[in-house]
Image (cartoon, rainbow, N blue to C red; front, side, top):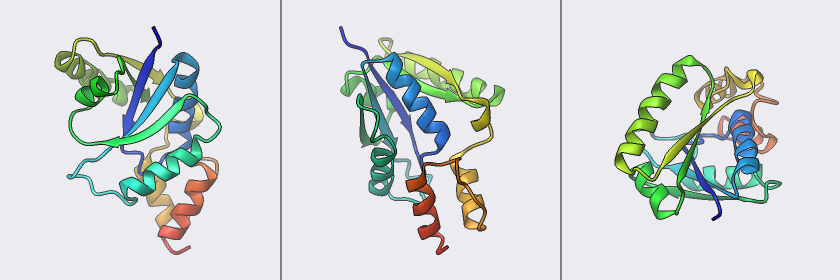
Length: 160
């Protein structure tokens, strides 16, 4: 039986921390579905289509990943994609608490789903998509904290 994992998030935009989690998950599982969630309560800087393109380009060298988008419950989408594992990245203890709640709820919604928590590398522990957008919007450098394609896209979005 092949293992399929789902890594869901907003990826607005994908960061080097996300990319590290994806690469590590791709070594653990036969296939990793990267699912860009659409949350109408959180309008993004990048459209879902732009995010998907950025994720695809950033993951170009990783053979066993695919990129898609979804709306609704992550557990339902994982079931639809035949994924029994949800991958989540952890930056710190605060993430742990919220990720545990989410893992329990997803398992409650579908008891065939388990969650694997992957701690990020220390160098990415302070990296978040929102912080990268803020720094880039103010003209700061996000080099090495986001893939080069994302750095370029952020500069374009903010007219820099």
